[in-house]
Image (cartoon, rainbow, N blue to C red; front, side):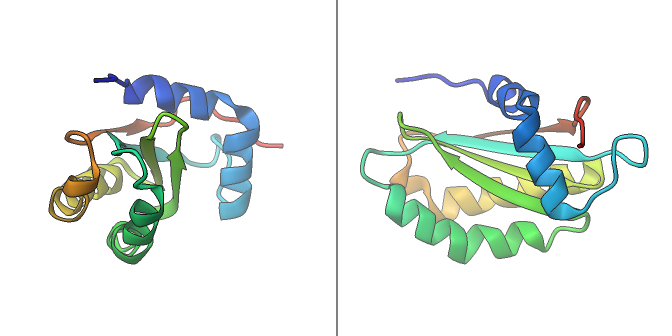
Length: 133
């Protein structure tokens, strides 16, 4: 079984200035000096060949649940070549990030478990470094 570290994924994604700049530009959100943002990250390992079904279920089920959490700003899902699926949600407060993980993990257990090779993991925290153009 392949192990993954959601913290390392977050560091890699958020250390890529172009990715985070694009995310915040899309949102029209304030810079670090004007306000903080918080990330909620969920990660799991999909069974081989499940990408299309995961995509469908996430679009139909997870997006409405996550985007309904107060403070929601953005939602991205990355499907890696090794079938690791990482969902990154951005919120304007820590409570929203934590709540999104609570809701998402419940939804994942109920709707994605048959498509995953094991349980999903989650973490949330402040985005401590970012830059804007």
